[in-house]
Image (tube, rainbow, N blue to C red; front, side):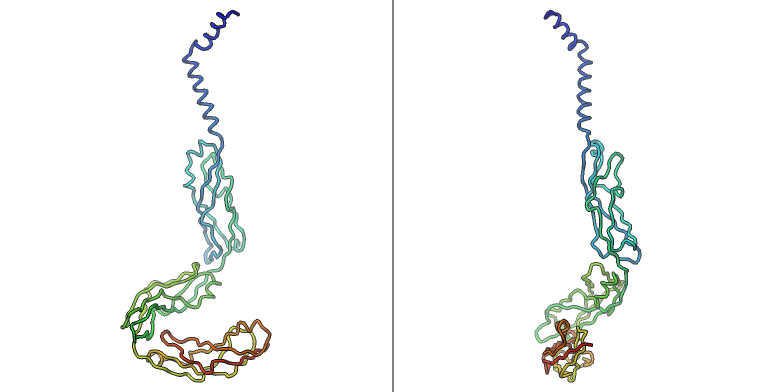
Amino acid sequence: MSSLSLRAVLRHIFVHNFSLKFIAAVLTLALYIWVSEDRETVVASFAPVRIVVPENQVLVSDPLDRVKVTIRGRWSDINRFDPSNLEPIRLDLTPADSDSIVTISGNMVRVPPGLRVVSIEPSSMYVELEPEAQRVVPIIPQTTGEPQSSYVVEGVDVTPGRVTIRGPRSRLERINSVQTEPVDVGNRSESFERNVQLRVEDGLVRVEYDSRISVRVRIGSELITRTLDDVPITGVNTSLDVNISPATTSVTVRGPRGLVEALDPDVVRAEIDLSDEDRRPPGTFSKTVAIQNLPPGVEMTRVYPDRFRVITTER
């Protein structure tokens, strides 16, 4: 074939119907790019977790608030999907789930057609349920600061005096009272009243009250001293039989006249903590005493005698 004939053939191939051939080449290139870019890909996001607890039960284990969800699909489908809008995963617990592992599976996550969930982290949650209970406990008012010089807090009254708390039964057994937020008595010389909130340290325990909690602080200036004789000594925090000698003590207290004169000697308790001795073999010990149940504003100034012989024996 001569060079002239070869040139004519090449001209026919590349020049004849050039516009149609150019369009076909562009479409072929676009299709190739689209097919190559629309390959499968993955995206990760977080889905909130909504836990439904059975009636009269409380979840005491740590709950999950969200999980990491990995989703796979074609790039074009992923591009049309907003992973931040994942619907909450609903976990309906039953009493049978208590003290067990609950699985979180991919079919709990709703995704558009063409996409699929390939992993969830974490994929399970430990569940511990307890029966819900309620209990009525006293409200203990709290104060902070000191009144003006020569003035003292004679007493603190709270209305109402008791409140209902609700929560896991095991937690309620450890709560004997609920405290108010502190009421500042700093630089005060007259009695006053404040509305306050209640404080509960346990996040699983809630306080049920509809009315306001009112604290009245009574401030006075006169202080007196009083001695309470023959206060019985009690050994506490022990499972052993206890013999204490001497069996009583005298307690001298000081405080505002109204409080000290109204103090009931039968309410004041002299206790010896035997928790350490309870872990030892029975024997004879020398112990000091702690005075309990003195009202706010009344302080102990003297205990006599202040040391006692304690003999423990097996029951």
